[in-house]
Image (cartoon, rainbow, N blue to C red; front, side, top):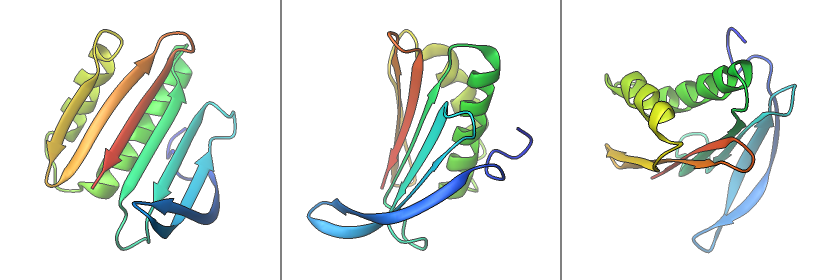
Length: 123
């Protein structure tokens, strides 16, 4: 997938966050192996989650591309983003990875039973 966002189909609805009703947008990759959820209005996103199967190299690349796209959206000037994502993807199967950057808390976790990696970013 050259641009992970170009083949995603987005849907919108509302959800509750901290007791308030807020916009939510979700997208799933065509092969159903990667999903993205954005919570909050476009100009004030409060939470983003990327969940993807990483059972083989193509699916791992797809979820990694979605994670890069997500981090660039919320932290466009973070020079160390690609390095943190790469290092975290390599280490997450052994230990949860977390960092706080410019008010965003990023947490990457691994579920071995399904070979699923999750990146959750909250602000």
